[in-house]
Structures are given as structure tokens and as C-alpha cells.
Length: 212
Image (cartoon, rainbow, N blue to C red; front, top):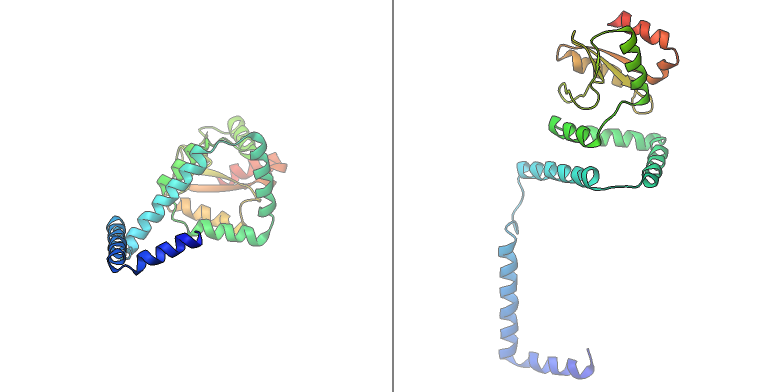
């Protein structure tokens, strides 16, 4: 603003009728803003906060998984960066606690599984091969088809038995008993097979026979 313009504005403001008109317009704008924002001056209840939080989780998931399309090169870079971060104990523990603290309903988990198009991992393929050759009535269910509580078992049979394949990269030793107890609460007997056990397939097959 030039000096001349500034001088003219001051002269206008010194005019009481002009000043009152501008103040009146300003008050009207404030009232209009208040009416547009129905929550102005109010507080959200615990229930409304929870609903908004769950709504945000769903929206965040839809955007990140359902809408974003990344090139193979980008996916590889993200995978390498994630793996490096996961090697830091503090980061790993913080992430575990973060996910434990979230309220992941069965519906949320099913949506995530179906959207990700889950396929058997390499260890799961090895177990599937063992079950197909040496056992009967076992099916792969780790693609999100079946949920027991809030857990999606990797393999199931007709005798209420479950096999879970754990990767030592993602799971802690105490996770094993926690998972067994979870399925037991629903009447299922579960066996956990760790990825490092797959170095000896004969022992794995014997373990399945002995435990189940």
C-alpha cells in the first residue's frame, strides 16, 4: 500500500459513519462463521471422538491401500526402507505397541486382507506342500477367507485344528502362546511353526503329527 492510499484509508476510518459500517460488516461475518461451524464453542463427547477416530482409520486405509498405485521400483524402495527401520529395536517395539493400541475390528481386518489380495508367503507354500502330500483335509485360509475372533488362521482342517506360520522377523516368542490361547478360546487346537524350523522339513512333518 502506497503512502497516498494509506492516508486515504486513515481519513475514511476517522469518519464515524464509515467506521460503524465496517464494524457492522465484520460482526456479521463473525456471526456467519459461527453458524457455519456448528461445533464452535462445543466439545465432542467420548463417543463422538471414537466414531470420528474409527471413521478416520477407514478413510486412511481406503486412501493408502485402495487408491494409491505405486510402481514396482517405488514398492521395492519402500520395502527396503521399512526393513531397515524394522531392524531398529526401538522402532519395532513402538510399532507393535501402536498397532496393539488401535481398535481393529474384525470388519477392518477383513477389508485390509481382501484389499491387499493376500497370497501365501514362501514359508506358507512350503507348509502347504507338506500338508498336501502327507496329510488330508487341510486348506489354506491365510488369504482372509476365515476369521476366528480377530485372527485369520493360515491353515485349517475339519477337526478344528489350525496351523499358523510365524516369521521370526515379525513375531516375538511370547506371541506363540498368545495365539494358541486365542484359538483355544474358540474351541480350536493350534500349532505354531516358525520359519527357521523349515530348514528341516522332516522335523516339521513329525511335529505336525505329534502335536495335532
